[in-house]
Amino acid sequence: MLPLILMIISELSLLALVLSLRKEKKSQLKTAFSLCLLCVFFWTLCSMLQFLFKDSNIDPIFWEKLASFAVCFAPVSFFALSQVFAKTKIDIKWYHLLLLVIPIISVIMIFTNEYHHLYFKQYAINMDDVVVGTYFPIHNTYTYLLYGISIYYLLKYSIKNAGFFSKQSLLILLGILVPITVNTLGAIGVIEITSYMTSTSFSILALFFGFAIFKFKFISITPIAMQNIVDRMSDSFVVINENNNITDFNKTFTNTFKLSASKVRNTNIIDLLKNDIKFENGLTKFEDAIKKAKATTEIIYFNKEFKIGKQYFSIEVSNISSKKNYLGTLILFKDVTQHIEDMQTIKENQNMLMERERLASLGQLIGGIAHNLKTPIMSISGAAEGLTDLIKEYKASVGDPEVTVEDHHAIAKDMYEWISKIKDYTEYMSDVITAVKGQAVTLSEEQAVSFNLDELVKRVDILMKHELKNALISLNIQMKTDPNIMLKGNINSLVQVINNMISNAIQAYNGKTDEKIDLILNKDGKNVVISVKDYAGGLSKEVQEKLFKEMITTKGKNGTGLGLFMSYSTIRAHFNGNITYETSQGSGTEFNIILPM
Image (cartoon, rainbow, N blue to C red; front, side, top):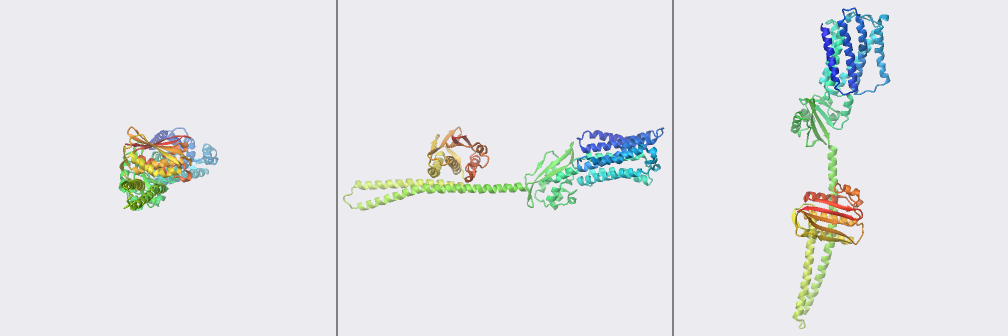
């Protein structure tokens, strides 16, 4: 009665497994395993019917003949299962059909056995009483060869991908031990081997394989094709269990940290980082991230970048679960070394461009100094000559009776006029020096002060006079609001921004002379709007799309594109303002600096 109970349990279990497989997505693995289940189910069903009708007039070999379809083709289905498990997907070729030759011959031999007795010379339910024919060893050798290869592949790739002590590998190993143990006990006479026991043992084997393959998914099952994929990933990853022991990883991880697979598997991740990777900084934060990940479905990101040797990594820790059951924790090490190096290179290049822009600004300042100081110096020199002549005249008049008091007053008046001119010239020079000094300072440091629009315009006019004169272009300043309106910020930075826009406007004329540029200062609500308007060719659509977003220039190799980009950044960052523009092809461009008061 025990064999019947075992077979009924096996059949019900196989049926339950078949029903559970319906939830799985269609795949070669599912198809191959379904064929295995079908063979084992039909085999066990025939054995069960043989047991139930053993006392009837039906010859027991009749059920063996029916079962032969399953018995003979089961090894092929198990072999197919092992290949798909190892390779994820196989392309079926014509030569694969050769695997069916021996099973087909075996089925024919069993059905025609009474005519030649090449399969069984004598059949019996008890295997010890069976006398096999000359063909049976061929069938038996082929069958166990396929079973052996299948078991080898299933066990090998389960251990390779999930580890020897994984639940998947242990289930496959236990499944293999069932038929081996039954046959061993029968061989030494401990139990009596019957056809029922053989089919039941293979049913149990199929059940163990089913749970091993389909129950434990991501952590414990990774077919070799998937393993190849993760091994080719540029990022390193490890999977840890509830005890923080590593259960899975890719080759990138072992190669990156120069570790052997045996050293990594089943090792506590914290101990590995501390002892072998020398990952001392940030371990507390790392442990906290693992604890948080176990309690949430959100990905825990490290805000800090870690340096290991000459490489930088950012780390992501996430929970792996199935139907709210915790399966493990995935830790992803993203190599951001190249990104860090690229950012450093960009920063260095930006500094070089900024330095180039500073030097260009200094060159402009020096040109402005040379021009703005040359005229007043020459005027002061002329005034000094005039004073010298007056002094000589005054000296000669001393004691001259013909020189009247009125003449002395006239000489004194001329002296005052020359001194007044010298005073004006020195004040102008002082303004130039102040403006130039402010611009030189703004190239190295920031100073936030209060200033009015009149002072702003005065500095712009002084510093741009030389460039405008050389280009034969006039600056039309239109103060349409109170010149005493106060603004707070770095006046020198604002002067540099306006000067850059005026320079761009000059260059927009492409050498044309007798043109004009409008500098308009207006008030719009709580904002002051400073506009620089030219009447040149306008901006192309290509330039408009990139304006303020990146460094772009219309000057070819003579421009860096940094001036306007920096101007926009300066107004946004230091004045909490904005820069807008209006342009029209063939009509010109107007830039508007909007500053809150």
